[in-house]
Image (cartoon, rainbow, N blue to C red):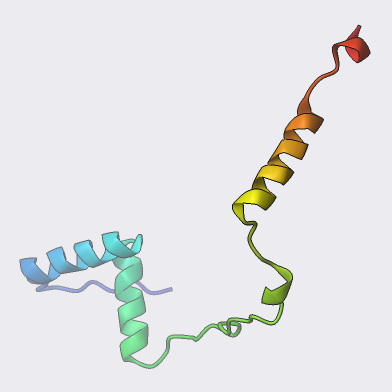
Length: 86
C-alpha cells in the first residue's frame, strides 16, 4: 500500500475531520480513506445489507403478568435446598 501525504490542509478542515472521525469512532486516516473511496465511486456496498423480518412473528414480549410468572418460577428454581447440601 502506498502512503500519500496531503499538504496545505487548513486548520478548520483538520479540526472538522477530527470531530467527524471521533463521532464515527474512527481514526482520521480511516475517515479520509472512506471519503476518498466514496468520492471516486470505489466504496463497496455491503452484500447483505437487507433487513429481514420473516421470523418476527416467532418472537415477542412478555406482558407484566407473564414476566412475573416466569421470574417467580426461575427464582424458585434457583433456591438451594439445605437438605441436599449436607
